[in-house]
Image (cartoon, rainbow, N blue to C red; front, top):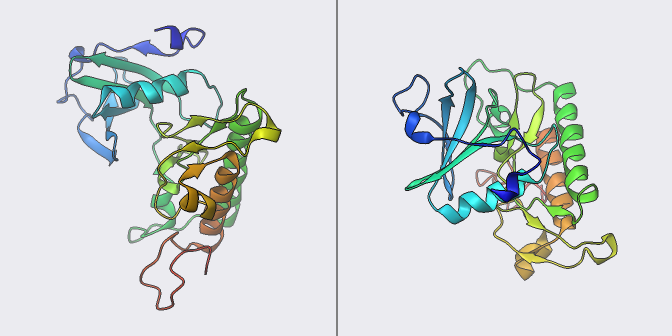
Length: 236
């Protein structure tokens, strides 16, 4: 596909040569509105994350966006398959999975992230946003920032994932008030987004602030167990 020119690591995957019975494949890593993510193993032994999309359109929306960006803190697309009912993207595997799993409802015996690691994650996510907002032309509105979409490698280095909601924003910084329509993850939306149903680059920055509060406080973005009326972390 023309979208993938200049990005040699992206290749077509003949998924008929992969079996869901292969070792490791079939372990569900997560599921969202657009599809389910599994852990898989390629023929060369490389561990990968495999997302099977419900709709072909969703696959190409994400593939088009990912094929045009390259940053060490954005999850890399390794390959894709779009044949018959197989609408699949293969990503690099992030062994520690989502940041959310390390912040909330920890398993017994699991230590919480230390302060140094939390601040490292915050700084690296900021650099990833800088790349999308300031080093892309036109700028890219990430649009779906949340702790479940920030994935961690084996050294707790974060990478942004899930670019199905990303949009190309306004071309110039002084026109960034222009907006695009998008759906917002629960709790991760600026007030003006909820009121107008639109999203701007500034909205990404607001949500980054929400995630900073999660990292610093350890609180969930929405906590209905709170006895007060302040269920949202921003109101806390």
